[in-house]
Length: 203
Image 1 (cartoon, rainbow, N blue to C red):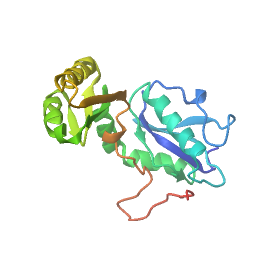
Image 2: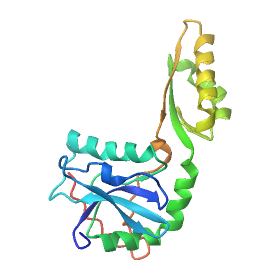
Image 3: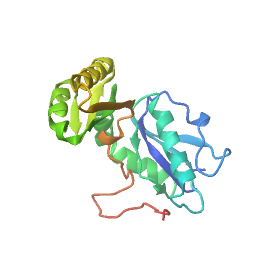
């Protein structure tokens, strides 16, 4: 399939343990998923459909592949609709971005996301400030937390909720894959030349 267009789900480190052959791409149960090795990283891909639309079932299939990959380690999600003209083009692009991709993967390795909601919103600031020291990073109620401190973080959320004594609620969702702290990437963008070999078939 080296000369055929490939749909890109994301980028992982070369030692990521997930087995893409066990996953299903877009287009139904026969849509195989595989890796495109590129030195220290690899793209996770499937055969590109003839067209793409942002249909719920296709968005869900994209998300399910990413969620399964996260179970084995960090992944940089590609934007929905990212298609490389062929494996060779993708491999060259990944090699050129390897250092940046590895750094981004390292920033979320061993960490998860916990989203916290406060009702009524008037107490949001105090709650977020109380939780911030327990997180690596925080943004708009989303907290990047070390996996081995998640229980401590959730216990603190429960304590804050109890402290409101019926005057409000503090609720946590998670742990989740830290998508809020891993920007959706375009592994094909060629910043040096200003060209973009991306074939966007979405919409």
